[in-house]
Length: 319
Image (cartoon, rainbow, N blue to C red; front, side, top):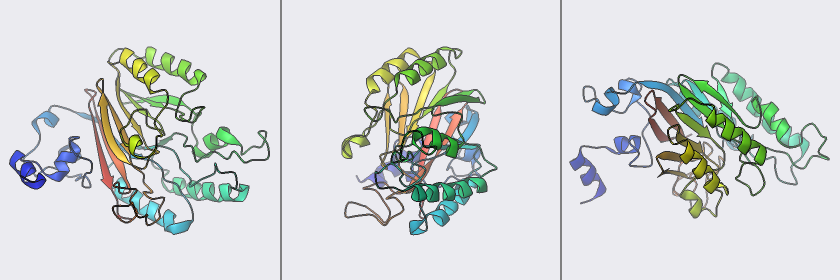
């Protein structure tokens, strides 16, 4: 029996498989369906009917904004598609600009990329956007560390965040934004560990938590792409287990591949890349135009429910 026949026998479609976490990709969300789910009128979902959605979030990551390859226009097209899905706000997972971190990158090139992002962000001024730092966002080639554009502080300013890591609350959910970009790349520094431990500890029992990082905290796809997962994952897993009544999901990017891992009741979603193959056509390993290996360019729609459950759907785009 092939996959199509098996799904038919189970009464499922490719779209519903993706929505329930059994598959990798989802069709664009039908916002006329109950809770925005891809369901035929009148069919519903008994489990979903008992849940009440608190928030719908768009997770975009690895935007890698640049002037080449018509990237600004294609980004705008993606945003129009996302806005039709009636989201509450954006989570931006880092690598917002194409690259500032290489030794040959000039000040003018860094400013050019951030100027484009500033314009695009102004066009989305009607939406909150909570961002984290990506490894390609920082300009380390500044003449010296006293330069106003050197390192993380300048990125924090460009993204308009409260700091390189922070947290906030919305509709019963607690959100933690991490800075992965420390020694042994993909890790938290000691100050951030102390802060995170205190942040989780002060929450009331059973407060649902979603974490955003650039590097995956735990992933399978990192084994296919030479690493890139948090090197301090054992520390994080132990910490999350101490707060297993709270930590529900962790979302990330960095790898440009899409996967889902569940461990100790926590779901880890690595949500591909909005830019796919950095807005380029791809290479010999690309399964499709602009794909990175077998993952198409896309974004995730994340539905958070009052009972602490999470639905993460990765939606490819064709722009």
